[in-house]
Image 1 (cartoon, helix red, strand yellow):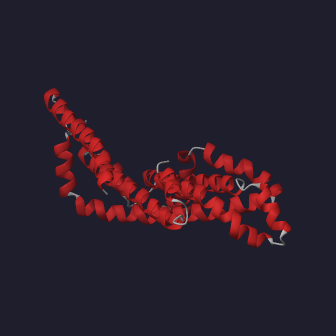
Image 2: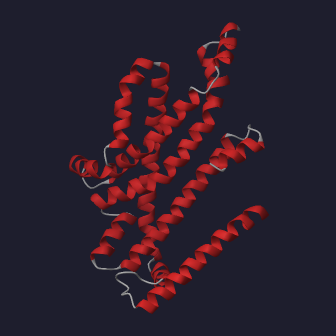
Image 3: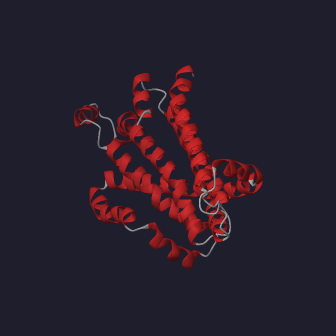
Length: 259
């Protein structure tokens, strides 16, 4: 805990210095608040609008949770099918790649057209963004097992279910958790994109509405809440990783946590 406090001190000092520089520069230059509000005004707006922002943050979090579950389920399924049935894996490869090549902004209007302005378009956008890192990392983890160890277990009469439980799954879990951490960090961006295209709630909706009436301070306040949510999501997945990988040596866990 002491090391965490010390390691976080330079970042906190740098943040405070940048905010002070921002405050002074905006006030000296006389920049209108609807263009670039000073941090003190953003902080005051954050305090005043906190109930509104928290209510819409709940909507965004529900979209992220559902989309992340959809992305994880589809990513695990694609990775396992691609690993155990190589022909299907090769057939799925272009579709997996295209899910990241096609801009989500281009797909989101179609999703709104097909599914309306409710929850599903945002959930599908988050699922499309998050399933790729989970599928790719899990596939890499499954293929990282040395063939000698697998051959040894086959020689001893082990079935594939036993090999998967004893060797493949423990070897793939660190990579899968790394993919889940990446997915958790980009999930919020997917939810906000969906809310920008067509939404009636969520922090992205608040930002669009505030931008339309030149409330840049409220846009920044929503960004602050989004940043805190992103840090919280990353921390939750990191805690889950420590729980899932508690059997690994401590040095290995530190290396994974630092990625």
